Length: 508
Image: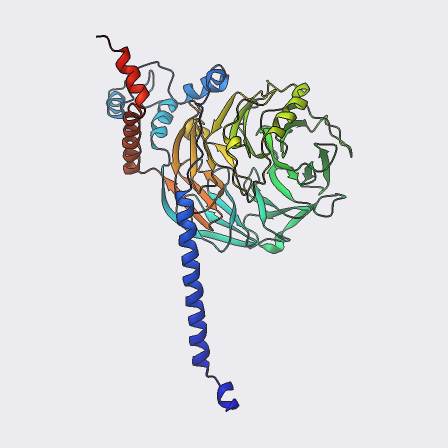
């Protein structure tokens, strides 16, 4: 009897394994469907106040964007593409030019920015942390929690896989990555005490690394970037320091942003892609600090910053420079994106009162708690806030979300695009502060995304393990315009008090 029970055929084993696999897949599909419905229904935060653009309209950046996008002429007429094409054929499109000027081309291109998920390019095995094009857009790099770096062909929009590299010393996940200026190498960071450098066309055996000298045994590099000259790599770490690594000598230098190593540096960036000396660090207490690598003192206690910026109620998650040496943006856990003018730093005498304001808001952990309502709609700006523009409407939680300027040559940097914890891509109009597009397509937070330098395409990577291609869809644009008109007409009759007020204003 025992022998009969113990003797099970290979076919029975196969069938049993198939049943288990089918059951597991069914459970995964059920959980996935529940997760999908949850994130699709998760609304964007309600912002009570309108964007304030008065200060921003007086800046050089506002005027430059209007000029680059062909918006200089003050006309009440809407842009008519058919009329513009007729003028071009008659040689009247632009004085002295037989075709459209570059500014007119950007004006037309901005009518066709991405507004819909077009395709799912890849479905991977784990959360996607990095999605990044090289400078020319011919290569797309993705990095996931599975420990693999994948590089795809981005030259023709096919995005077929070129190489897959097994990363070293991942521990938790690949956190950030960046291409070298010449596009021949890339560097990545993990929850470890090293920068890792690899050739784009290499293998795992070609990996080199720069070890970080630190007294803290557990070091994580949350953000990294190549210098414009390609000879250095900067990184922000969890021990309150900015790490400067030399690619040739493999040596490192440490810049202390705070006296006590308890404040994480979540984001780092060069201020200008032509200057390898000036960098900016975004800290977890909401402070931005600018360092000049030629003069900043490197000590165990504190490195002197050139200037600092106050304005965010909570920690910085990402910094993106406009690459003009003056303006940059920062994304923050206080659910806002701010634009800063490097020529208008904050007065650190307001630091104490700003801290007291920060303590008045509820404390929360952005990794797993919901965003408190008070953070989405603060009663007033932080004391000493020197930012020139603020954008609100996206949700920042779970991870360090990226926000970036749209490409200069293609759009004139008319837009800011960012991932959202609701699974949407949010595109802001820089000039008005309003949301231009909210692209759905992911079921979980979008940590990183990148706009192709030459094509109107956004590649987004999400914690739902998918990488999506987002482009312009004409039908979606018509639907969005129809909904906007409908909401505008309905807003006139929403409140009874407004109808009564209009009736009372009407003469007898």
